[in-house]
Image 1: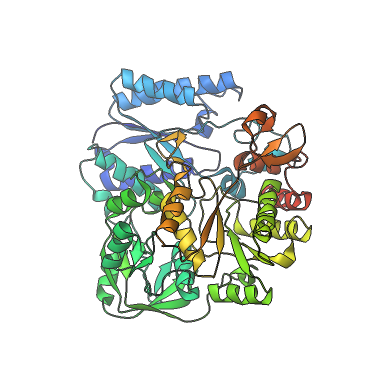
Image 2: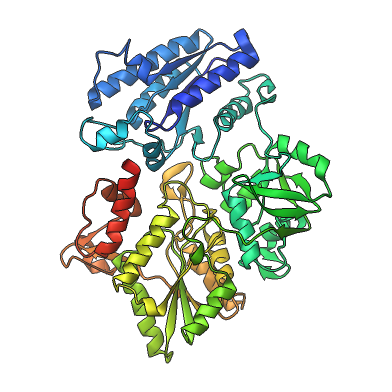
Length: 569
């Protein structure tokens, strides 16, 4: 084992200290004196070595300078230095890295990237509540910035992961670098999700079950995909001739696979939150080629991608001949009446006597620019000769990364805007689409479109970068070209792959500071525009301030402010 420094950075409450302590405990119990380690915890160090320092930017820099030098000394003496510091500024983290590099000592930056929303929900020390109340000054994430690492060696979002999962990710990385001589840490490090009651599934698998039950995927998909179906989806983007650009899969770890080997060919119940919801018939497993799958889906194999991060420690995929459902699937979260099947949506279309349907998918709150576009689209369809165009407002309702606005708050916000008249409720169907997000760019756009076609949609508005994400290794650029989603759909439409459903290009709406209103982007007025991104909007909501006049319907904004207030309280 080579001595190394593992520098864990992230917001207060992200899980740095918990992971550090569990990592040291694992190293001590498995390797003993072979692999000595020491934890440098920010809270502990500030009570001793750095008790003379405050939280100004200058004091924070000195705090990091001292611990960088000390961790280097421990590293050079043959120990693993586990540093658990918020270390909010990139310049200070880079200094720590350079100090080690100059001494030719291994140094790895680990971003514990748990979102601010999740950290505030945890708030075990009550610090965020005090910071929001102004009782704590210069608090990172609230009144002081946190500069996220652009290219960390490891990215760990703790939301939805056990402490053991997080430790395993770090140890797997160290081993892959040749700095850990063996994988003894694997023994007893994982847990099987198979019990006497059945196989425990997570939210993504439940989302796929609902897609299968309701009919949001081709009828040829009767269970989680087998290997042939997976390869067809990956390389041909089809399922027995129907478009299916995303794989419907169920990844499990190695211990679960070993336990399931005794159930091959049998029926196994699926549990969600401990409750039996379905049953796989004639179960089997096969190896999960996750690098191949990730490369084909996302164009990267970086663990910093939120979906690839979910594949950590998964080695096999579960499949079967079919799924037997034990009940109509529901979340019991007050939103099940919005989770309409394609057939239920078709029934509402008939009830509203629509002669065409135009759909709009979104995973963010509606602002006035969206409403302007949706109302203008209806006018244009009427000008083309349609008598009663109906809007299918169809937010993504499956798993999303944890810094997205949760579904319940989004649906309440959409409903408030409709009730206020910004969208005509008589000509709108508000329904929730159950599939999980993949953040797979153009391939996901294709799935979003082909799935909605099953509900009888005639037109679909496709925006800029609707399933995009920043590059996991360089957040200064996009992972996918923002225009490729719409271009892919245009190509598919020309080739007759979309069942005559027509693509309506999304017009970019921006906020004009002078007129205090949303308007379609005009290059001549770009100096008058203010960019109000989703992240900026969330920050404004958290502190209870008002958005610029004319950006969003006040009733919709009130819902978002109340949601963020509920988190803080």
